Length: 246
Image 1 (cartoon, rainbow, N blue to C red):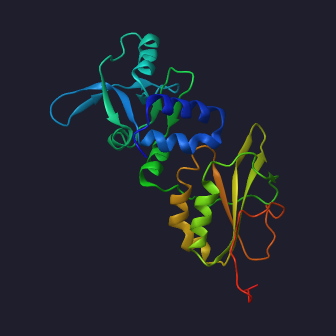
Image 2: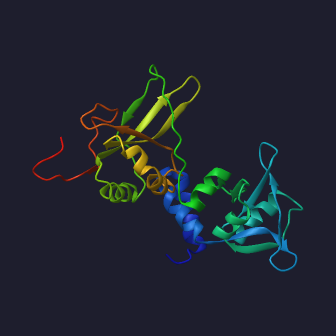
Image 3: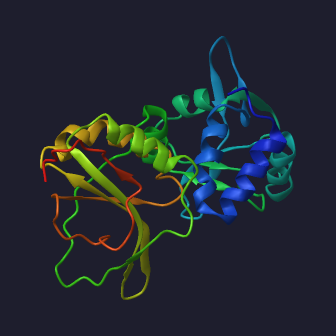
């Protein structure tokens, strides 16, 4: 895609703030855009960037979709660095790996990017971390109200390349806790036991962008085995010949 303009980026950011399912489209466009970063250059290929203090008192790196969004910070923080650089977003993220970045920190719509999140987006892979759920945990599941555009299509294309995958189901999972509610997408992949290992790297790449709006939990199930999304219609089902494996 071409370099997105400021109105498009800011419209996508506002939509993502209203609907987490729109976050992937926003992040994809942001990575291809040019952003504004407070700071100065001093010599060839050397830049000094100005930071802010976050709510926890730690340093965060601000960046902006436009000069107008930077001026909002200048009004809120007198004496803040007025000089700025225009950099490709991807270059800025590579320069500041390991830092926490905040987009448009003094605007009505902003976004914090944590170091691990930035690393996933730059490397094109989500971190898949095994979790053990206690047997007595109460979990509510159902069909998701919104699905990030292109998510099921991208996953279906991936599963089609792996004959060991029989079907896949996408749902929404809610886990009530004492003082909060844990919500996420739930992806159930049905097939041979080997799929957990063979799918890992490619699945991480496929989920990298889509896990930005909301977390995605992945569960594997054997063919014909009961699973949490047994009542939800699969979005992917492998077509078999006359003689099926099961």
